[in-house]
Figure 1: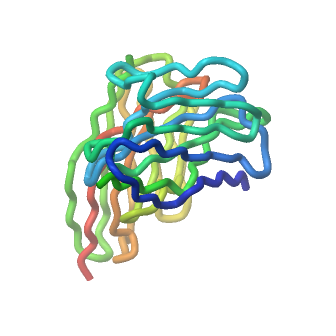
Figure 2: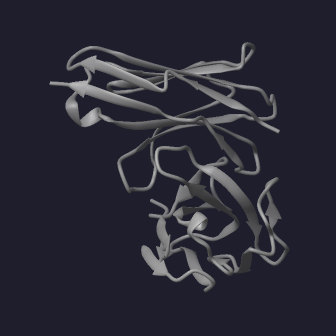
Length: 117
Length: 111
């Protein structure tokens, strides 16, 4: 089946620093990747839609200057949390939409747990 | 935009009983409805899905029904086992793959 990896799986950083999270589709090409954030005991909230070769589309209330997304190739999207603060601590999950899929399935990465101290 | 409501938020059943979780959606453009099981600290795992041109789908102990007219779909788990305990999310997905998730249901199966 389709495999999506994320790196790092967990990260602790100090307030004010930036953190980059990578999302890779390992065995398929993904024209679209999605970035979600999940706070404890809450649902997945879509932050942005990342399309290869174009600017990301951000959901309402998500600061595009704070959460920088780059989708440089059909297998890699990165999310950079700039000037991180404790309230940014969360579980960040990406998903990839398969180009050759029969429908609109998406495949989730394992997630990155970010803790900002 | 799409709005997905999921009920109940918590569900406790005895081992062997059935569990039903219901979701409603608002956007008629959604045409794919996956259900995910998420264990603590892990990614959501797809357990079953249904497309808008199908009314029902079954996979062993798990079944999903869809009423496109009423815009609601349900997850049915029969003969529940303790390992079914987890958080379950429904989602409504568009052709572009964009999913809106329900708030989740915490299922507890008591042995």
